[in-house]
Image (cartoon, rainbow, N blue to C red; front, side):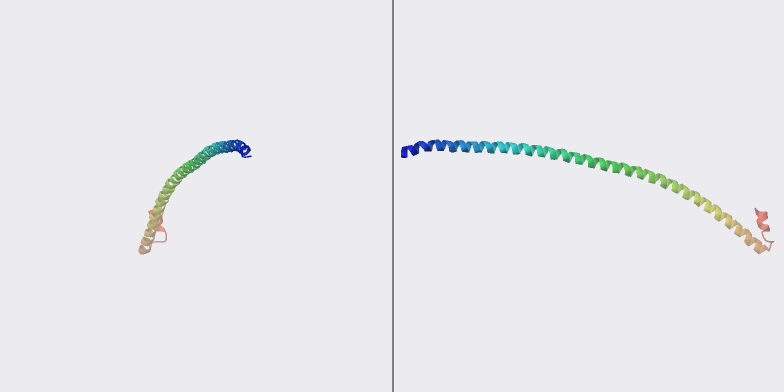
Length: 124
């Protein structure tokens, strides 16, 4: 019986070895598959990140361009407003000069006791 057991054991040891070899091969194949999946996922992530970065750059560039356009528009409006202010200032100065002249004439008329508005008619 011992001889029979000894005859059975070596093939069982060979089966163990082949089973271990088979497990190692499976593990190796799974590792390769996992590595390939990881590489694919990494490439997809890099591609997606690149796309997102491109969209962000485009959005920022568009915003910057819009800011420059708005800045130019504001500058033009500011210049136009400065021109309008200068024109109103000139008109205001003219009105002040005219009213001061009228006031001066009226004061002279009051002091000279002229008939009403006669100084104004003669002056203008």
